[in-house]
Length: 618
Image 1 (cartoon, rainbow, N blue to C red):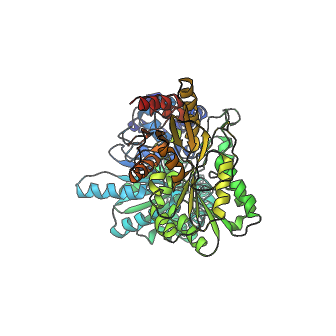
Image 2 (cartoon, one colour):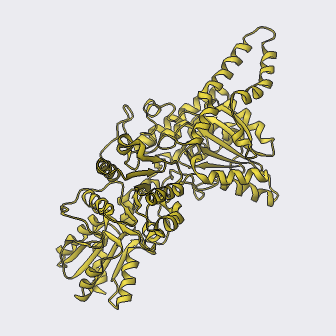
Image 3 (spheres, helix red, strand yellow):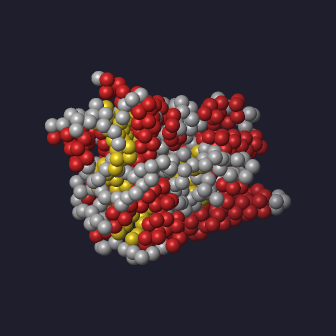
């Protein structure tokens, strides 16, 4: 059967074991070819091909609900649910999302993109099913990395205490993005028994079946006693103590074996954990050897795995290296990450100061409060968390850091549009979230040198700060002279007919707009508003006193953003409000290339210039 023949999971039901293995190979090939061209999550998707086939052969999607956590491992699921022909559009604007999306297919039971939510959502669906008197299965497919998030245990405790029938398939590959850490990882390692239990089962079964006459009878006897043997060899009381029936570990690349377990579990009307051991990157040598590198990749060469093209230098990596250098002479500097040490650029810090780097797993709330505790005891912690994931720790930032005025520096990586990863990964709500927090200095650098200056400034202060910056930034033509001082904005280009206020990466488009305006005879200033809270009131007073029309531009939602802060200041001071506030609309932004999205929402240089001219005319 060709992949193009699969219009729904029902097409899998009649395939033989040999055909299923061939299908798994075809799916892997399609995923590798697509990610090589479009970029995306590779290693995690290659590891769950057989698991996804077994799920769709056992359960009837979309009637049965399969919820993937985090969701980035859904490519095989999309192929098997009638979207193979659309696969070349994966992560492209107006194409398939790289995550499950309810609006994309009825087989995507729940939209995901942030970790540790699937068990709660599955429990909610199971309870809705029971309240409505309906009959279907609910399955949460959860990676062991997501299980480092505390929300999973809240849901497990709730489901186990009420004995709501549902299934949790624990996909255990020993990885999240960075290698899994903590007590749970050790528990799962013991459960896996270094895969020795899986190998022992297979070897014993093969040996028994080769014995003439009595072999099959002995094999059946072995099947009956192996669960008891497993309980001797494998400590599975962790999940049973929470009220779940536990099955596993089972081989996550054995389709037939998984199907048998899934079908048995359908008959059990209790909450169940099925522990599946898989290999991340399966079928692509480079991804098997370095799964962390091939977690989320840019387009690459199929032959050798080398990334195509070049991206600007990672600001997170450069910041991490700078903090590492500072830590040589400052014993009070430490760092906290949430399962993303490498992705946030702190690998060098971890290598040089392992005793001062704390990777807490996918537990952003804990990460922030841990940093607050360190700061309260005399340390200077840098908590490196993607802006979109820091949203999960709102209360901790407000209550544990800001209320106590503790010197914690939040390093908010991936600020701004997240490109092809889509709405769950755009960092476009951080200003609205953090700007109202009393005592928090909110910063946004225009280059790596300004970012370094912000780090130096923080280390001289006694209060909290948050620095939001994009993944990378094209080098500008205007050199940074410094030194940085919070609350003081920098004029990048003088001009008296308008003043464009912006910060970070979008300044490049603002400078392009100013040049276009100059060509049309309009001399507009461009101001680097690198301190978003508090505002530079002296600069605003100078501009408004001179009756220079203000324009704010931000790669962020307009609601509660930088522009609204400037407008509120103008209202308070009785000054003229900005003639234009440009930013992202009050809706979730889809996936697509940053340049494409800027153009769509009027934030490219040409669009900014056009809107400034229109505002000046009015």
